[in-house]
Image: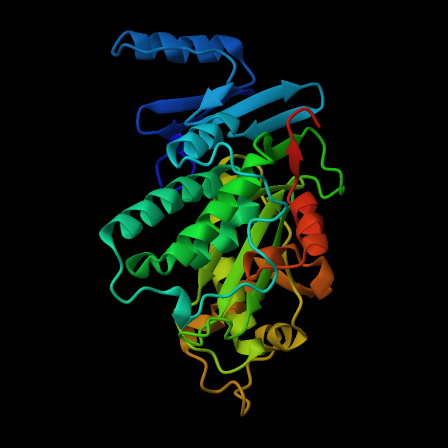
Length: 348
């Protein structure tokens, strides 16, 4: 076997036309192959040294339920959501259509200066469960989860109610998850595509921006991020430029992984950005009055572009799927972006 990336969690064995890919998480493993004989040989090798259990075709893995159909695969966490609702006594609470109302922000009045320990413990427990869901199959809740997670040390009844609202949204969409179609409906095939966005100075407490990005392959989201940026930027263009650099880091990692999997990305990965000034900054190395203060590290995007790894392209703000990772949008846009993320009920 050869490691696909430096992480040493995904391995590939190639023998002639036969291939076996193994992805590991501690002592759990998913195996993908085009040669059943090679797979049997490998599992016999493992059995000669360890006690293993072969569960056959993947249906449950680390709390994720996989449903197979003729046209693809559906990944959801309905069982985990139901256990969470029971754990936090929310099983009978009415469902809501969105995880967070449009324009919601956290202000000083929402924070407890001397929070009760039970409030801190409860909020952390709730956000821990929500983070697990957000990481695996529910990217559409990434922004509200990240927003609340910034203030666990000042947990208050108001923040706990917002966390409960996310669960109430999940209770009405328990069987929703990411659908992996056999063919990309948008015709992009095996190319990586990225969307990036930032909400400038949206945090009223720190004046820092929230940034987010999502990377698609074969029309399916495979990596996403929503987080408050680590610095105060001086303009919308700068906050978008900073986030573009962070997106480049994700894209380079995935390009390296796909190279190891035998799916090389021969063309630059398109990063869709809705701010033209940020795109211009990535193309023009001149230190102009409004950009000469930008730290060197954030110009990494220029190097990625010059190396032919990425290409920034303009997209209309209403079509930028990464928008849902940077703010609480209207219900209409939320539904649109959720659809763009490939989230569907089980069986659809």
